[in-house]
Length: 236
Image (cartoon, rainbow, N blue to C red; front, side, top):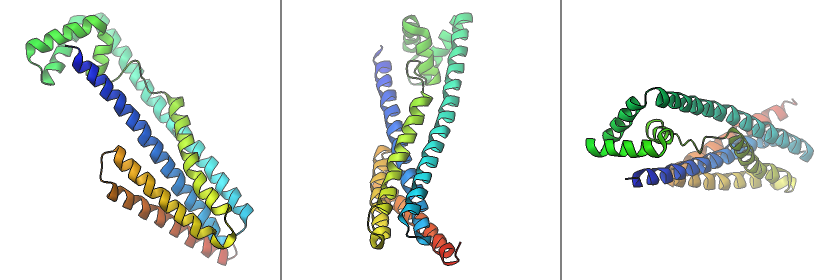
């Protein structure tokens, strides 16, 4: 009787891990594209290595901190909502246990169980842990694995930083004559990898995701380089 719940927990845990991996890939992708656009734009105006390094580091720090802060606020809001929903469910179980039992049985019946089996499953789940049963079945929340805003913030910070380091190093380490082609080639290769990875994690077709990634990154670098070149030519 408890096997469906056991499988569902494993499925939920797997889904959570995939979401974290997908978020890490997308964070790295953001770091690659935004920093590449910044340093390539600056490279259109100047070839000075110090200027490129300063601009790249500023973009890396600003982007990683912004990603971390945004993720912390977003996940904190989600966690507050989860805790509020659990508190309400806890109160309802205390004040009207029979109504909550019937509600759980109805939900299980709607998911395909016969009325008798749904009722028996609801009784057994409630006897074992009423709050956990309602949280998982009714709310889709695992009380033992609430979202952690600090984990999300650090994951976003690190993912963006790792992604941003590639174009930053590619633009400052090679000789001046090959900086731009090395950076463009490195960034496009990295975008192929992140596009393929995000598609695989989402069970989508890699070709379309890779194409979007590469075209978007190339467009960003092309626009910012043109802007930088125009500003540099104008002496700005």
